[in-house]
Image 1 (cartoon, rainbow, N blue to C red):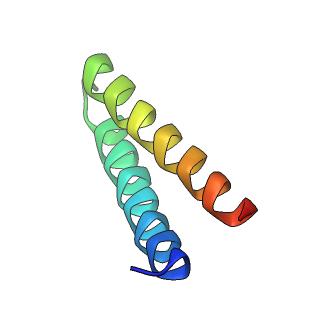
Image 2 (image 1 turned 120 degrees about the vertical axis):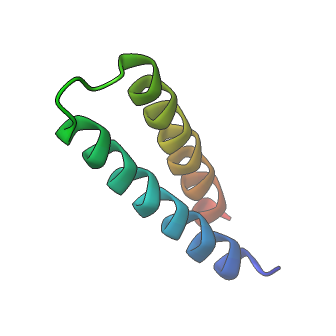
Length: 55
């Protein structure tokens, strides 16, 4: 997989996590543990995108 393809895949995953976070926040009682995990995953992906774009 080329770096551009990997970046595109990561951006799609990042967007999916953003949607999942939004959905969880819309629930009457959002689960803080789930939100923390989703945000942690999103940050990890953002960091990987940043590293790949620097190459």
